[in-house]
Image (cartoon, rainbow, N blue to C red; front, side):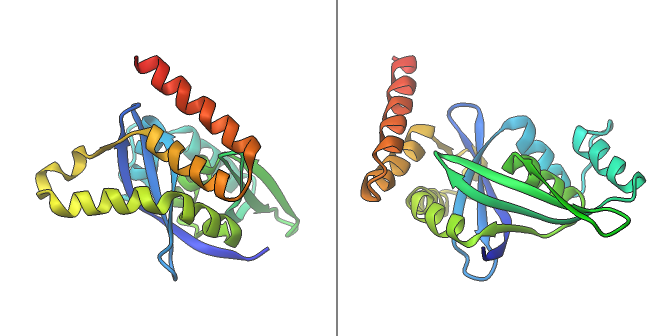
Amino acid sequence: MAYRQIRVCNLYSTQEDSFLLVIEEIKSHQKFGIFTLKNEAMHILSFMYEKRPPRPSLYEVFSKYLTETNVQIAEIRITQYKQSVYHAEIVCKDANNTEKSFDIKATDAIAIAYLNKKPLYAEEQVIQECSVIYAPIIQKMEKRLANENMANKSSFIISKVNIYEEQLKHAIESENYELAAELKKKIEEIKKNKA
């Protein structure tokens, strides 16, 4: 597998009180998105800008435990995108240089990477596939924000339905009909709950 370095380059609020993290591959500037809850988004931002909350978070406790047990984080990477879910892992090395990897939620992996000032990677296929899915949505957001004044930029709202519709279009084009059926159900549920 080929991994490429990525970074968080933007964050948008959604109508469902969640956030869309915009992730950018550093060399090619390809972008894709990851949905996260407000609490997770705020932790990621606080670690990015080194503004720690007054009480330690679980991320900080985990990182401190690793340090005190002489375990080092070797690599943090997003490994796959399957059925609309990102998969990630943390690779650690102990005092004997023995490597062990742990599955982790992608947003938690991002938070831990920024907290520990470690580079973050994504598998090349994840970047390729997800940039196609999210590119139209991200371009619409960026275009709209470019046309608005600076005061209104933080209030831009996008619907999760828009993201699911883009994913559905991509699933149909790639003939992944099982995923397409699942996405249609999600879209119908959201629209039904809003009615």
